Image (cartoon, rainbow, N blue to C red; front, top):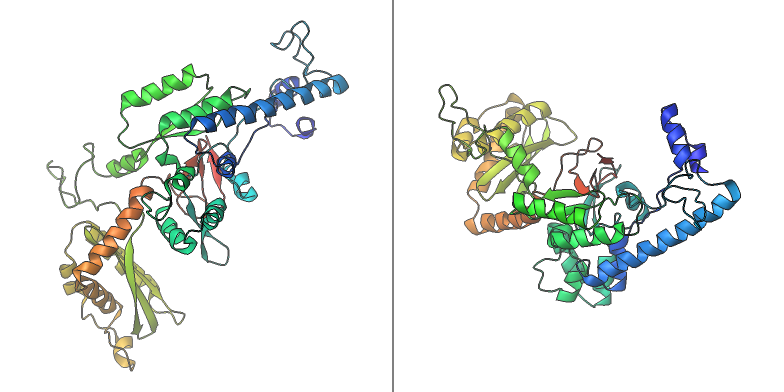
Length: 431
């Protein structure tokens, strides 16, 4: 018996736990189930399915708890409890069902989390070998094949955007089956939670996703609806709310200062770099330098060049100096410093190692960075616009959906079932 075998931190907790013997049978993979049945998450049929599933689990759980009570006795606090009624069979457990957060175990099991819809249809997962794998919701690939659609083409777009939204190659019925959490109205999120709560003794763990334009009054309405529908708890998240708080933290109380401006207060003429979007598009160039090879990556957004990264080959090079230079250039670019001004400052800096080595066409690592910046500035306008539009389309669905960095692997986390979950390594934290 799990309760008897468990170790408890305090004697008081052990006494209460063993006196009530509460357990929490629950579910995960509900979104997968609906896809298998061909039922959209935001439909009346999905709500009815939720009721039927949890009613069956609760009913069978009660029967088994009563059977165990006949063999081993009722839970010690049974007398005088809500179950101690004339004609009521004794219960082994004070509670039977719970819908708990299942972020980590659902990842291990390869199914959707708890009763949540799909947060996204594609995730990046970083493995120990250093590779980055793009994982697609398995049922999506199966469904595309079943429909005879161009799986490779559609999955490439899904890998960029995380959803089927605005994909003209996908029938509406299939797109409806695979709606992600932010594409589902808050009322439908709540309806599914309330449906499960009807036959759940403890609370139901679920996140109610709200669009960015949601007002305070609308949030209040959702909270009141959850109370009136019998939910024992609720987690709401307004899309973009966390991102806006992070942006306002470094720019004063007004929260709307642009990069390159000041607050107008004496001694407060400070420039603040604009925030970095989650997704950027760029190019990487290889340069031969005095100590090996230098790879320079230049990324841009719709406002221009945003950042520079450098990486040296196996032969080495002044890695720390190149990284420091690229970091300072990146923060200068996001603070409004003109790219041409940066190029002018670092172009032509000379390094003895580069000058002495044959076949080197740059004079130093900073000179290589300047040349990389110059090539991006001189790129055809159509190329830059296409790259910026691609990055913007990804950020439109992903930029405000992150909830801090994972403490284990450093990747962005998401919110599911009221918990912070990392889809890359499986880390999760609730509360």
